[in-house]
Image (cartoon, rainbow, N blue to C red; front, side, top):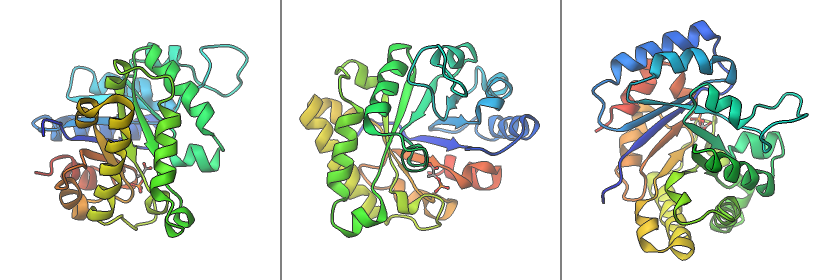
Amino acid sequence: MGRNYYIAGNWKMHKTRAEATELAKALVSQLKDGKHQYLVAPSFTSLEAVGAVVKGTNIRLGAQNCAAEEQGAHTGEVSVLQLKDLGVQTIILGHSERRHVYKEDDQLISKKVKLALKHGFEVILCIGELLEEREAGRAEEVCESQTIKGLEGISAQELSGIVIAYEPVWAIGTGKTATPEDADAIHAFVRKVIAKLYGKDAAEKIIIQYGGSVKPENAAQLMAKENIDGALVGGASLKTETFVPIALFS
Ligand code: PEP
């Protein structure tokens, strides 16, 4: 199929600089012979420290969010220019916690996606339905809408800087994982949405990660599915004992 697996760890609001540095050092050493693509996304406060550790390794440096503006009077926000200055390569946007806890809508997410791509970042665009939306049979509709709106105004060329992460909200941090079959069905559907927007080749190339309670016990089964190209891992990315086996799955 020609797509590489891409395993990303989202450390959310965890770890001091010392703790983040220690984890990053351990990952650099334990993943150095890993065959897949890797990324860690520490809190803003640890980006510089972790960046120094992962620089020149096979682990990319990611941020968990960015502001929708380049600079200005935006108290508490962090700009793409500041992230670039820290060596960040990838920005996670549209995470369900940003959408549902911090009320970011598709319009704001789209603005951030455009700005991040303009500044040369790779973007991991997260999409995913709520439990009530799945139960109402609306999972595809929600994922289609979030994909279309998140990619609005993005050219076919720019699409190469986009990774999609399908994260059903009901599976994030809950211990409930989508079955590999259910996840693969949505991934295949999203690929069709991409094909309609950008053509079949682009749809074949785009990496679609799965996220939602990925653990060592379920990672290989999920990633064995044709349309699942990696994982965005939250809780299990906080310890080498759980992240390394996921990252080294074969
Ligand atoms: C996430 O936050 O992106 C995530 C998938 O979290 P968890 O693995 O803890 O469900």
